[in-house]
Image 1: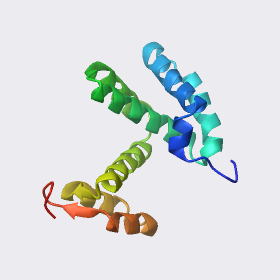
Image 2: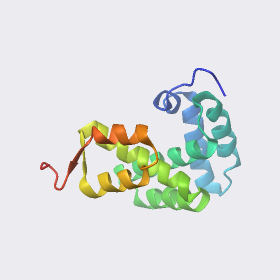
Image 3: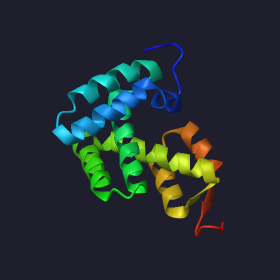
Image 4: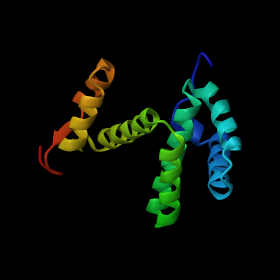
Length: 143
């Protein structure tokens, strides 16, 4: 792994990220994810992250893009591949990252999401400090 990792958004926005996306779309179509796994292995060295996490994170991003673009069949296929091919812990990490991103963007999370993150991350003091800066709301718009 490199001494100076590249931030994830930067990786997913460059050629390597585009190639991983294309390999995952191809894998969804053919059922063969070997090219996508090779791409994730290459990217892992750039970002100091596990290939499994990058594979799962990109699948999650594909599912969200498909859902946003009103392509429910693709969104479901990507989600199914995610839960079928990735470990439960990896899927949970991806979900945590997504929730954290949402919370940081809007400065709050619904109480249930906030509580779930706090419980799941109770042994990670740094993450808990970040979570403490995100408001816990019982209803959107209300603390």
